[in-house]
Length: 145
Image 1 (cartoon, rainbow, N blue to C red):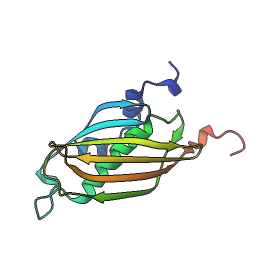
Image 2 (cartoon, rainbow, N blue to C red; image 1 turned 60 degrees about the vertical axis):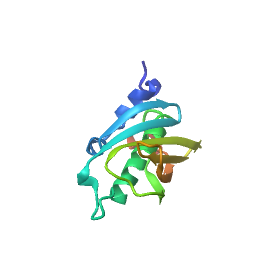
Image 3 (cartoon, rainbow, N blue to C red; image 1 turned 180 degrees about the vertical axis):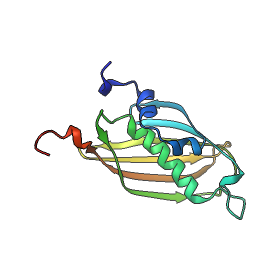
């Protein structure tokens, strides 16, 4: 199997990072352009009001959107985020949270992604969007780089 034709779940694992383990991330399903993940969130993620701190929620959405994005990338492409926006809808409590994301549009050099974060009763907690630019790793640009 050529690296560019990796199965979708392998593409997500290949692009995973240690921070995803910190978030308690588990990939539930993925198809081309979509992802569904869960995050096991403990008390250590809470702020002074007992809610999950917003930065952690943003990181979870970024992780879900990144997983969806990774399913549409070819070998050698890397997608740094150039903009991310999060709307916090409802306070989140510790427990299992579910993140879903989808690629809205993938162009030649820019990708738009959106994602939602829900609690275990399916209440929407946060919604995010991401704009990513597609770059090639320097060794893959060719001799005119």
